[in-house]
Image (cartoon, helix red, strand yellow):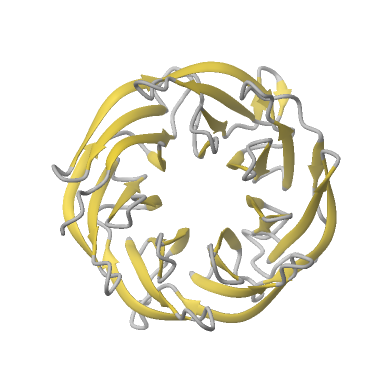
Length: 356
């Protein structure tokens, strides 16, 4: 029996001014291979990262700026999602208390919103109210660790992502080659320990396996993936492998960007800006270790972010420089991807999130 491809809502975040459309609601038809814009909003300057509430009833977007209405730091915006159409209505906005917020996520219960402030080098926790709106932050953390050796990019701490996994919260710090580990307690974030990537790697995003005790970190500066074993009792990370996200014969400049596991957990995907490709890895289901499978041109320039459909059969790539979104089919047996073509032209797309 052939499974019907995914059909549903897609939310797109883009760079742009406060007057330009930077948050879009689109409808994706996997069978037809179409992505149709249904709503455009200009309420968030530089909406570079999005997160959907676990209920699907709220969407959160960072505004990646240095200040907000004269106050230092960026902001995060909560939108209500219309249950019938998926269209968005602005609910409220809160400060992130750090410059250039670049990542937003929620905990599994939908009670905490986490923000990584890149230039601020810190991370924040904001309570999510029962109605999905945001309250002011209750935690702001910034760890002082030894800086990495890349003087141009690792001159200070740079929080690049923040993700909860079970009882623990993880902050990837590009500036210090660290993944700082916290436990959320009484609205605060208590520091526990740090996992380390190779010097100069520049950890950017982290992805946790849903069934196995492993985490995968994409390192921006040296375009590698570091595999960590996760201790479920204390959240501690132990590095067990670092593998290139680029083919062995590539000699140019490239910065890694995004990382996602397939819904099956059998394959891992990363994006390369410069090489302009999607790398595919097989995940050993016993050891968690990676083996390179494919390095495929992504269909545009600067693949900042991508998303895999919930059924695992297709992959959408946002090209920041080209201003387009491309569609790939995924072979669920081999994990390999095949370009089906361009879905949409849109200014500076940098984040894709599927709706509920």
